[in-house]
Image (cartoon, rainbow, N blue to C red; front, side):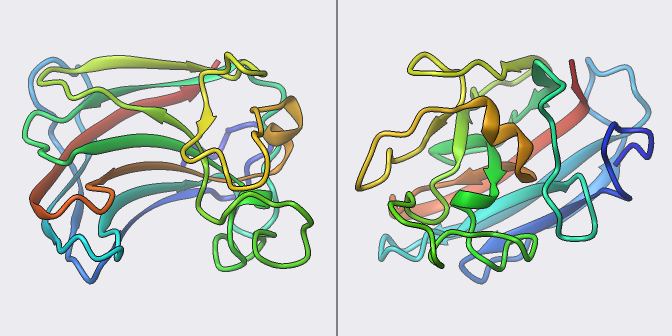
Length: 200
């Protein structure tokens, strides 16, 4: 991650997967349409048995490397270049992972499932549905708040409906791009490109 990022501390990117699948993350020359020499490319195939194991592929961005919350309140939004010409997953999301909604294992600092009263279910992150596109597309996600916010909980929890708030920006653990099938049985391909990630 860019070492000059405001409030950052030796941040980094990491690939991950659920459901015992094998993925590959590379920095490679991007498809036509992106002017940079390299872009992040996450690719792999997986089978979802539809038994609530939720296999998924993830590209994770950690702004800080010491398990402390990242404060992004000085920014108005995040933008990036996105391309997924061969991705067949039914669902693709950008997620803002905040401490109250993350289990303890995420960044070592999650609160979900511990002592919080009325917490939303773990992994129910503030998310944005990413389009299925075959050419490079600029994605712009404003940090708007309230019921019309661009980022919304995936499942809206089980106890309350919680809208994205400015306070959520003060306790960011990671940024997450994921390709998954969300318990829809079948064989799928994750294949997406990411570049030019920046705040504004």
